[in-house]
Length: 269
Image (cartoon, rainbow, N blue to C red):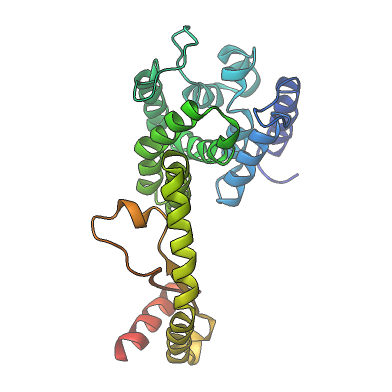
């Protein structure tokens, strides 16, 4: 109860559940699970309570009869502007564009999103988590829509995630886009990546043990060494061919001081 805006968060959950109560996803599940999953991802990423509220209500203007003015009356200008910024612009034709053809009003939607993001960065952060959850559900849509959404994700939202430092999200968006744009190549690359990870396991374990041994003294005992593997998309998008799964290692440390100590210990070797 001491968390700022906790009562507003509870209200947002109840309102989202009420307004989406009669809706279903293409998968057949109740629609409310989508904004709840997005809200959970936002919370796990460490964003504030207001960002979680935005996530819960991000589709109410676009997919229900709720208007921007009604959101403003209930939650204030800040939420009304952000939720409106997350709402697609439609041309009213309801026509699905042909493959390679731009989605109607897409540029207006992007401008609206960017304009809202300039006022509140949380707009684009929630949008990226929204797109990630939609990409995970993409298998339930028709093939043409899968390709259109995957192309948009790869060209627009994946680079946005990269530039915001959300690299793990960018990697998953890239892999999911690759999966639906090039399904045969995706399966082939996945087999190849799994095979290389298996073959390289003894070498990776050996290097990891060596690094841990060098770091196993003093305050550096809290350090943890983790291998970094190439992504599936690296096997296709890289200009240079990828010949191994191992990309490198990362060392997780508890503090900035431990970071420089670990770096010095490894450089001395």
